[in-house]
Length: 347
Image (cartoon, rainbow, N blue to C red; front, side):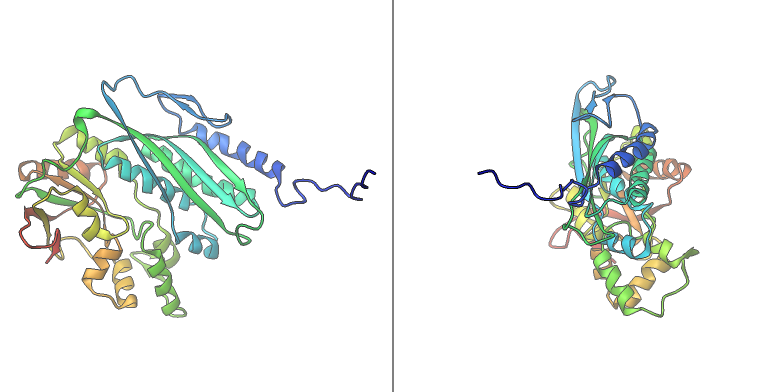
């Protein structure tokens, strides 16, 4: 006996997945991705896999990969309806990490997941991703948009990204040549970047109803949400011109936990408190959280988003190159023998 068919057929759209909306998003994304194309792209968005050929000027290319997300900064993007810059954050967190090995970012893929796809919101996010890739000289050649009903609250989404770069084997930055007497240069951050936002959100809760109108000359929300600075093009230019020994991307864990990752055993970074400016943003966060300098330097980038270690004889010229490119550069310390001290001291 054959069972009766249900009276009304169910479509994928009835189940919460709108294929037409996904197709519309892909069409919105294509011209954004096209602006990021560069040497090496063989096939980009639209296929089952993106194809990329390592540029021919590399003699002994070593591939460097990095992946990351944006963290709880997304919660504020949802609450404040500020979706156009978190894509830049997503790109920056990976390309800045790849850069630390001395590598040039080559291509990027993103993953956008939501419960119900809003094409305008997703297009704003991916527009930021494309802008971040464009500013980094990195091709956006693929990604995934996943609409998963019931997995995410209405109006929320998640982001992840993946970057691949290349560096000549002989030019990999390992930090092995760092030695006492080398200079530590700090490149200014654009704000909180994409780390420490669980504490930022607690500060917002604590200060609710008494928030400043502006910080550092920007509207308060813009100052909080300012996207992560992309250091790629300026630092690559400095690497080509100067014998930089090590780079450190200052992310979660701040100066105290990221700088030691590129220091040889037996060395320490002695940083000078006050050698870089305290912005209104970080002063407000510290005062609102009620934490000391140690916690600030372990939680936030605290005003320094990238660190350059170079011999003292080359530090002035390297600083000049970076400043000419638009970076704010500060000599924030020196490398010393470690002894029984911590790997990073801020005095």
